[in-house]
Image (cartoon, rainbow, N blue to C red; front, side, top):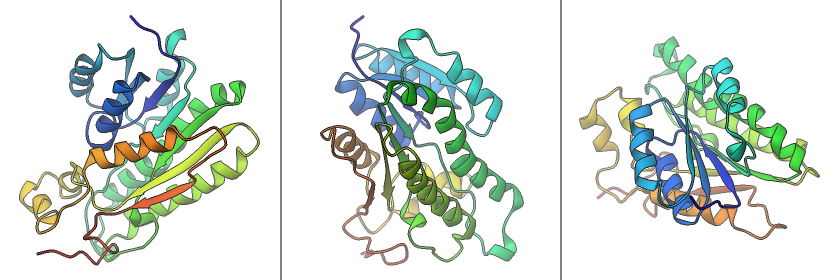
Length: 253
């Protein structure tokens, strides 16, 4: 098998932005560590991309602190030096007024979107610090730039990602590690289906009447970001569909 020079670890690689990013990385010869909870989907993706690059699967839930560290520590030597970390795992659960919010939904969003990102970053950073090089891309959201009605805890979790991204960049300054965030607006993925707990009809309506972003659009931006010259770091980038002006203003026809 051909050996390439860079390795990327992608969380939430079994669907959406994570999967699209894996595909564009593979086409460009980046070795992949595909992380996610759905082993079957990861296996299918590996089989699809196996001829393009070297691939290793890590099946874990980012909420499980112990498992995150054990799985990343267990990486074979050929995958142990991680050059690019895509902190993509994240989701929304429910869309309720704060007084009607579900405690389990709140826990899930904070555990995945905030704590999970921190766990994975903490596990990956030692090798980047050792080599004095690396690139961390944190996938945020326009929800981390502007709170919208009933977004409360989800928005709070994405505001936290924005703050963590800034803090990482400050703390790692001078260490040779790039840190940046990509903050998408409305992207047609499984996001809304998860938010509405499998109600596909309700989820589909979110993207009707306009052309939303696609996972591939964000993947292409991520690829652009990680291929800038060594002295260039895209620190914070927000992207929306043409018809989306803000979290609450969408031109639907």
